[in-house]
Amino acid sequence: MTTGGPQPHVIIVGGGFGGLWATRALAGDDVRITLIDRRNHHLFQPLLYQVATAGLSSPDIAAPLRHILRRQRNVEVRLGEVTGIDPPSRTVTLADGGVLDYDYLLLASGATHAYFGHDEWSGDAPGLKTLDDALAIRRRLLLAFERAEACDDPEERAAWLSFAIVGGGPTGVELAGTLAEIARHTLKHEFRRIDPSQARVRLVEAGPRVLASFPESLSDKARKQLERLGVEVVTGTAVSAIDAHGYALGDTFVPARTVLWAAGVAASGLGALLDAQRDRAGRVLVAPDLSVPGHPEIFVAGDLASVQQDGKPVPGVAPAAKQMGSHVAHAIRARIAGQAAPTFRYRDFGNLATIGRMAAVVDLHGFKLSGLLAWWFWLAAHVFFLIGFRNRLLVLINWAWAYWSYQRHARIILGQDKPRT
Image 1: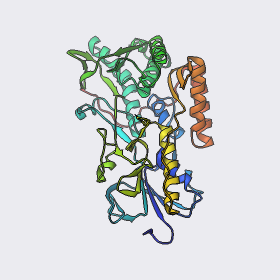
Image 2 (image 1 turned 60 degrees about the vertical axis):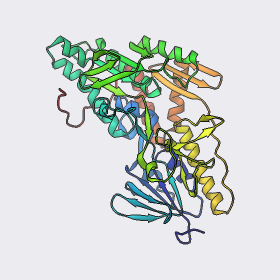
Image 3 (image 1 turned 180 degrees about the vertical axis):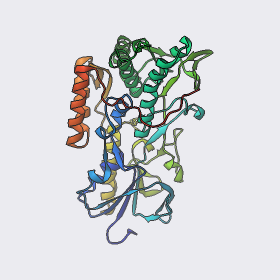
Image 4 (image 1 turned 45 degrees about the horizontal axis):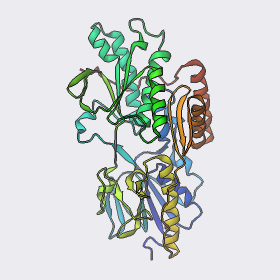
């Protein structure tokens, strides 16, 4: 029996891949949906690094949720933040004091940065999860060259031209490769006192190799492609300290005024609002149908869900979140019909990662590509999955221009930024 009136009321928290795909999958059902998000837009996170490195503008990879769902009559979009969940009364509380009843609840609020017990590093080594993060990183990167240009002290200038990305996963690899291209090509001839091509770009990975989720052969090729772009790859060494002046590898301090974090993620704090078991990263341990044990009306999807399949964790990637969102819609439909919800099965289609201009690696379960062909495959896949014709067209135009000219059109420094001391 439902508690929200003649139509079951489904509250979906989070307008990312999991939440949006669940919302769309319920478009034809006789349910009332409230989609709640702290931001008014859906973000295509796989291309967020392109905004951070001035290749794309924010609207190229984001679209307002109200616009995306404007023709879906059974959904209401609510801008807000969930601060409380009461499963016995089936209500959620918002930061503005509002209280909403639900019959079914989906939590898909994503993940945030994890600094492995060193949250004090966050101010000096920002991570990349939101558009705000991307714009802040873009400002930091571009200002580093400006500070170097204005600096008279050779050692301080070298520190401003030293960049470090901590974490050798896809985000770290993409940031490092693109930053090397910016320094060696995009900014060429634009400065009078410095040579941007002399910038030091270092990728630091604590594990034995970059792109650890890929086969070792592709990981090795990715490293070689990075090194050809001018990136210094350091593996097998963890960062031991970070401050405004640089970072330490073991007992060795490296002066660097720009350090970016791409080493780890933690689930959003929404999972802590539930009386449910969570893993070390804060993800909720869900039942096989993605519901919360003991609460069959509450589901968790995306980066907030801890899911095991065939003895391995389901990765926190966009395809997995989309599949979870669609599955939750099927599970809710089954619950309403009085049927058992099906077990979630993740279909892994493979891994893609771009390294730089005409450089990428692709692993499609035995079918492996690297270099130019992999880059074209990566580009086509990402453009295909962008939401909206306008977004696809803009991305294609901007990438085509960047390909032929090495220019990045979004190199505008926004916001106020005081010199770092």
